[in-house]
Image 1 (cartoon, protein in one colour):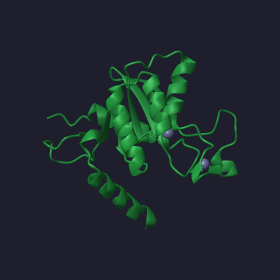
Image 2: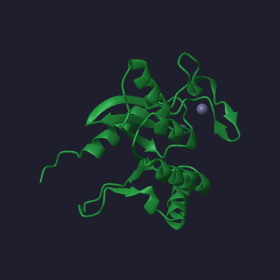
Image 3: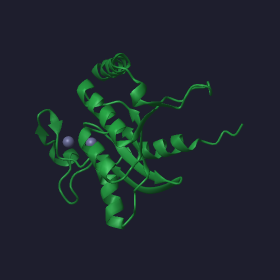
Image 4: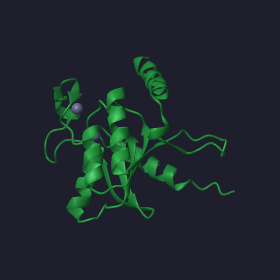
Length: 179
Ligand SMILES: [Zn+2]
Ligand SMILES: [Zn+2]
C-alpha cells in the first residue's frame, strides 16, 4: 500500500502551517479552500490589512473574546474575492471548528464542505452549527487523529456526535489547557 499522504491529511497539514502566520496568540487558526485537489485560497486569523497586530499592541477584548482579528475562514474567502477566484462548491479545511459568524460566510460563499480538526465553542454554539449545517446541506466533518487501524473512519460528521461525546472532548481539551 502506498505510504503517500492522503489528500485530507495533506490539506489539513497545510492549514496547520498557514495557522503559524496568525497574529493573535489567543488562538492560531488556519484555513485552506480547496476544489478538485487544488488550493484556491488560504487564510489565517489576523488584523485588518495594514492595522496593528495583537502580537504587537495587545488584544482588543470584548465579552471575553479578542475581536481584533478577521478569522481564518473569512480571510480565505476574502483572499479569493480579491483574486477573483470562485469558491462556489469548494471545501474548506480549517484547524478549528468554525464559529457561527464564519459559518455564515462559508455558507454564503457557496462552500459545501467543512473539514476541521479541533472542536471549539460552547455546547449551544455547537448545536446551532449542527442544525444550520443540516438545513443548508453543508457537510461538517471532524478529521480524526490518524490511527494505525485503517478500518477506523477518517472523518466523523458532527451530526453523529451526541452532546455526551462533545462534552467529553471539550473536557479533555480544557484539562490540557489548564496544565
Ligand atoms: Zn487578539
Ligand atoms: Zn470564526
